[in-house]
Image 1 (cartoon, rainbow, N blue to C red):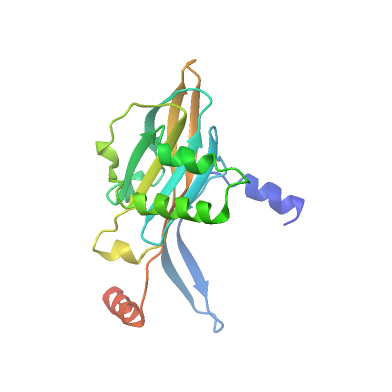
Image 2: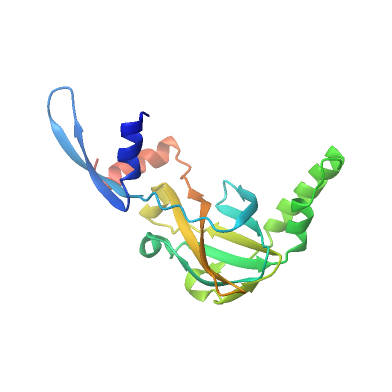
Length: 206
C-alpha cells in the first residue's frame, strides 16, 4: 500500500457497505447482498490487555490489567441491533484465574504452564454469559477486568453468516476521566458441510 492509498484508506471512516456488483467475463452484472460491513478507523483503545483468547465454540475472553479502579457505564456497537440477540457477555473483576495466568514468569516450568492453562480453559466452560440488556451496569472493576463473551447463534439463517464484531466498553476512572476500549475477538464462522451448503443454496434460491 503506497502513501496515497494509505491516506485514502484512513479517510474511509464510518462507511457502510451492504451490496456489491459482480461483473462476469461475458459482461453481465449481478447485484448481490453482502450483509453489512462497517469501515471504521476509529479504534478505541484505553486499557492494557494482558490476555485475549477465542474458541471455535463461540466463547471469547479478554483480560485487562487496571492501574486504577474503573466503572463500565455502557457497552455499545454499531452492529448492536443486528447482533445483541445472540451475543452474550459477562464481566468479572479481580479474577484469581486471570491473575495466575497474567503473572506467569519466564522461569515457570513448561509442564506447569500447560497444566495451568488446561485448568484455566476447563474453567471457561463454567462461566455463564448473559444477554447484553441483562448485564448489571454500571459495573465497577478493580485490578483486573475479564470480559467473557459467548456467541449463541440462533437456529435460523443467521447461523450461516460470518461475524467479526466490535463491541466497545465505555468507562469512567476514579478521577472522572472517560475512556473507551474496543473488543477485537468477538467472531463467529459457520461450520458448513456439503449438505448444509446445498440446503442453504436451495433455501435462498441461488
